[in-house]
Amino acid sequence: MAADSSVNFNLLHRTCKLVVLLCFLHITVTVFFYVRSLDIPFAFVQNQQSHNNGTGTELKRTLDAGPSPTFQPKTESLDKCPETSPLLVGPMRVEFNNPVSLELIKKENQHIEPGGRYKPKDCKALQKVAIIIPFRKRDEHLKYWLYYLHPILQRQQLDYGVYVINQDGDEIFNRAKLLNVGYAEALKDYDYECFVFSDVDLIPMDDRNTYKCFSQPRHLSVSMDKFGFRLPYNQYFGGVSSMSKEQFLTINGFPNNYWGWGGEDDDIYNRLASKGMSISRPSNEVGKCRMIRHVRDKQNEPNPQRFDRIAHTRETMNKDGIKSLSYKLVSKQTLDLFTKITVDIGKP
Ligand code: UDH
Ligand code: NGS
Image 1 (cartoon, helix red, strand yellow):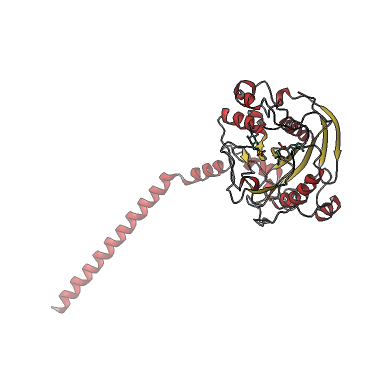
Image 2 (cartoon, protein in one colour):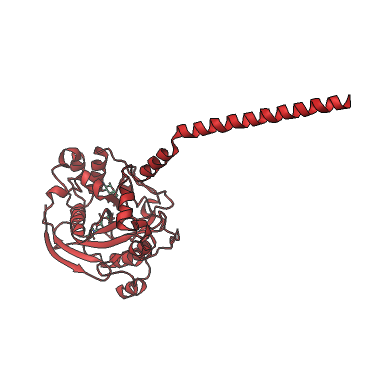
């Protein structure tokens, strides 16, 4: 009886072994044919080509010309600066009690190049920015502006230049035409891609308010002390603003025919709105700024025609702007902290 059951057990054991062997053989054959059907070598080449823009030429170029550019030493090109500069400090104290001298500003900003130019040494700036200041007889304000802004702009890691556009003579002042001149003159110097237009008497109180361009035109002086740190009205676009070259050209630049105070900034707003653009703004906190108090300038009295002009921006903007700008360059001085462009812009 014991011998019988031992024979049965052996038979069962052998049968099982055979079944397992057959299963293994079956799986091996299936896997073999499956793998063959995938045509793996062809798929591999295809993948390589898709990494090389599908042309296969990159691989050829690498073989012909030695190492690809990614293998070259890094000294040739700097890495891009980060989107947010790590040098920013946030809110700052701004006051105008003690006058500042150009010597002090120069001493404190030794990396500024002639003409008020700067770019970071350790990274490639994200934007090339021309800062345009309309100007006449505001030397004290300009010193405060340079004193505060140069350190801020350097911390913002911008590749920038400062252009002071000085209206020659004593004719009535024209802010927007001076800004157009600044745009045209700055482009003669460098391939600027962004333009910041700033009054000489406005100083930001927070360096997170970056003086650069955005996907929409930017209004930067959104929270001024003289307006109780809020916008005076929603469409307000005065003080400090920025526009890319493309945005500026889309609206044919700024109007040339606003002589005297007021309305030219509203005309610029109308131009932007008529082209379907919106206004980008920093928060009220980041956009805080102080205005240097002053009396009204001579030859910049309120323009009585301004209301009529802003009512017709859409009809006039294609004729009057950067395309029709004309002026006489009187002088261009490359000074230590800024480029001073003195210009004869005529009269009304
Ligand atoms: N600007 C000059 N010189 C002038 C006139 C204007 O440099 O004679 C420039 C300057 O950059 C100024 C900007 O143009 O910041 C705008 O000048 P504005 O007079 O239109 O604006 P601001 O805010 O003065 O300087 C508004 C009227 C002040 C009345 C003050 C009454 N308390
Ligand atoms: C509006 C002016 C703007 C001016 C703004 C703030 O009334 O040009 O006040 O002026 N528009 C017109 O007059 C049509 S401010 O208080 O800064 O002098 O920018």
